[in-house]
Length: 214
Ligand code: SAH
Image 1 (tube, helix red, strand yellow):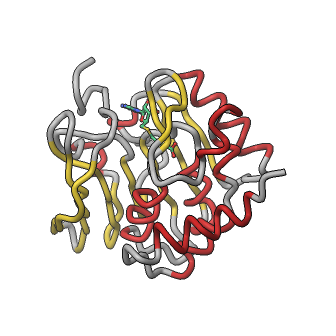
Image 2 (cartoon, helix red, strand yellow; image 1 turned 180 degrees about the vertical axis):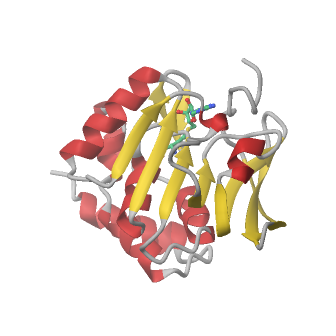
């Protein structure tokens, strides 16, 4: 029997803490969420390795460190409504669900959305709502959001998502070229938006009306 709890502890101690993840709530969530249940059975033994893994339909579950960095940049306190664009496996959504009040996650690939929804239900996450569609349009009827996280690479932050960010809100996204991006963090204050640049990264493309074309 594999001791997944021990693998999670090692993941946190060797991949996250030494690279500067400090938010205690983020580290706790990463210790708790069973990442191996978000990948296919044949990849479960690699679930806690320092890498992204394939999840089918040409998509990936992000590297644990990238999930931790993006989550830390969101500065979640617990009462936020969060929009995630790019559900993928549902792992990032589960981490968000541990740290915020309500999570809406949009996925354009229907089979992935259906699988993620089943997983999250089975694990008891009743504060996550998975939607199928083009997340570059956001979710106008659920907006505004206190936090928005885009987990696919985009040439620029889609205009509808900037608009759907609440005042005092934070948006984190990998922005740049098709095969290499940089994490950026936007903060909205009194209607103005400031932008910070963070770590370089590589995500699968955000494909949609306000992202990359097919
Ligand atoms: N957060 C995921 C990893 C995301 S991989 C996890 O924790 O596993 C990026 C995902 O974004 C892919 O599943 C891809 O299908 C999805 N995606 C790409 N463009 C999208 C769009 N316009 N709207 C919604 N999802 C999109």
